[in-house]
Length: 127
Image (tube, helix red, strand yellow):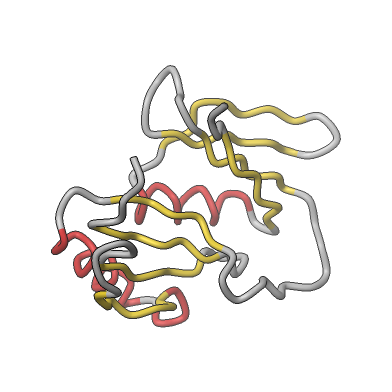
């Protein structure tokens, strides 16, 4: 078994696409509209893993505090770079960079436009 996607319901899909492009380097690999718009974002084509954005309205915006999407980066300084990139949008910054030891590694987190947490890490024992 392997994980193929994470689906997130979003209020403003264009704003969310822009966030994931800017901070995560993802690009649109699929875009369709049925009852609502669905966009797949990936790093590769064909995709091995996608973040699915579902443009469907919802009222509350309360995420569980540790729910997140984890993204690994190649170098420790990339964690600092992505957090610094969000300095112009302070509401985007969530967990400042910190070192949590050899298993968890060095990480930070941003919040996407809908309040979903995106963790950027280096040195985790995953992948």
